[in-house]
Image (cartoon, rainbow, N blue to C red; front, side, top):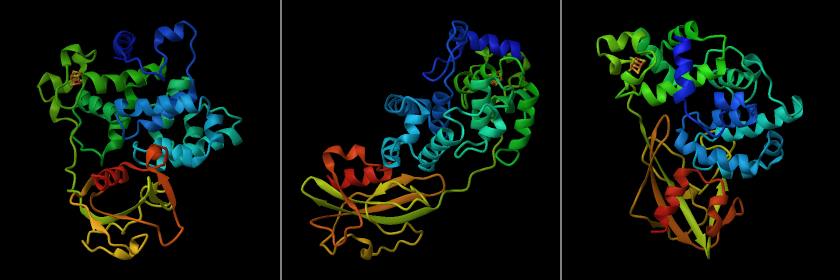
Length: 342
Ligand code: SF4
């Protein structure tokens, strides 16, 4: 099976900006572990189409891991704005500094060492070790789980029995070309063995796949039904003055930690609102629209209030609206700003 998959990858695998294709390797091009690491961190919970412009921006601004380590964290947070899961950006900077200070600017080569670094979990460690250093690892992401579930018709549901998928994937993982194999399997999952309409006639594993023999492909992987997300409610207060708006930095711990935001209430399942959280005692005007935003573990409904004038305290900064994209404002805050400007 490995030979068939690698042959398919040689012809049909995707070209991605951080990837060195087999023909480029033959021509002497080398994989850049920094570029691969950056892509793997950005691609967690994010599509390739959404993450690629961010990856390009980071590589342009910080061509090496040392450049990234030497950068100011607020700049990294601002550049990460819109990618979500902001702990990733904080860990990105921490990890770059560790690589600079403890590893002389070079990424460690082994999965077990990579796993010790901030922000690198089992999937990223396996992927970086195999892709960059040809270590035979077992790379399993959600695309791989889907392929494996169909090949073996695994009845045990995800995420509870994730380990079974891992073990089955490990049985197939080769020692020859482990990086290409891992990338091939991920490509197979995202381009051929898709969730709703797998293109089985184009699949190199057609003859090995248990699910396609009885047409049950889309019944796999089996999943435990997700609970409905709870709704939380809150409000933000957008104070403007000339061409600026008042922002505060959120604490490092907690949701959107370290990012900038408008002062606001806590977000709670109780629909109560405290005007005490506003940055100045003003006649706050309630905007007619609400912000709707979905986080991984709850949905948010946010009221937006606006006023004009000075803040009562100096626990924040005035951000120029003409360069607002240079501040680390997460998507939910940008949505609120847009509503306040209508
Ligand atoms: S044959 Fe179809 S269902 Fe089976 S692995 Fe290939 S694409 Fe997926």
